[in-house]
Amino acid sequence: MAKTPSTMLALGTPLPAFALRDYDGKVFDTKEINSCRALLVIFLCNHCPYVKHIAPTMARVTDTMLAEDGVYVVGINSNDVEKYPDDRPELMKVEAETQGYRFPYVFDATQGVAKAFQAACTPEFYLFDATLRLAYRGQFDGARPGNAIPPTGQDLLSAFEELIKGKSPSPDQLPSLGCNIKWKPGQEPRY
Image (cartoon, rainbow, N blue to C red; front, side):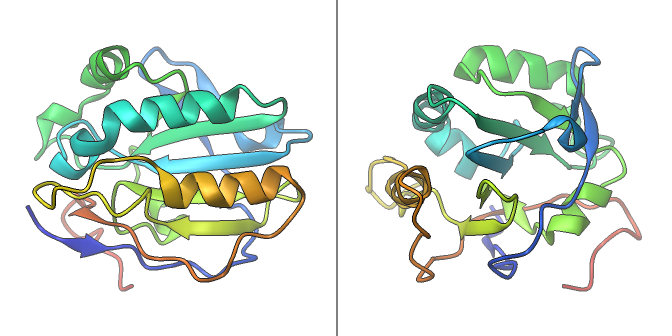
C-alpha cells in the first residue's frame, strides 16, 4: 500500500465542471445541478485497502447525506484500468452493489477530472457548498487499515452538518491518506 496524502485544494475553489458516465452508461453532469445545498465528490476505486476499510461506513454516511433535500453525492474512479483491472467499470457496478453505494459511481477514463481536482489518493473527499465552492477537503476520519480506529466519517460529517446549518466548516482540515491514484503512463501530474 502506497501511503499518499491528499493535496488539499484551496478552500473556496469553484467546482470543476465534469460529465462522466457510470458503469451502466448513465451520465452524471455537474451542469445539470441547478441548485443544491451541498455536493460531495469522492475519489475512490474498487481495490484500494483504504477505501475498503471505510466502504460500509461511507455507504451509511452518504445515505445520511442523500436523505437531505438538495444534496448530491458522486464517486469517481480515475485509476488506470489497464494496469489495475480490478477497477474496470463493469466491476465498479459489482463494488457499488456489494458496498451499498446509492450515489452515482462514475469513471474518469481520461484522468482529466482527477487532475482538475488535484486529486492524489483514494479515498479523497471534496465537499462543496450551495454556491459550488469548496468548503471541505480531506479525510473521512482518522481510521486507516491497521490503526484500530473504527471508521465513523466524523470529519466529513462535521463539515457537512455545518454546511447544512448554513455555516462554514472549520478551515482546520486534515488531508486524506490512501493509495495513490493509479496514473496512466505519462499522465502523472506535477502536483
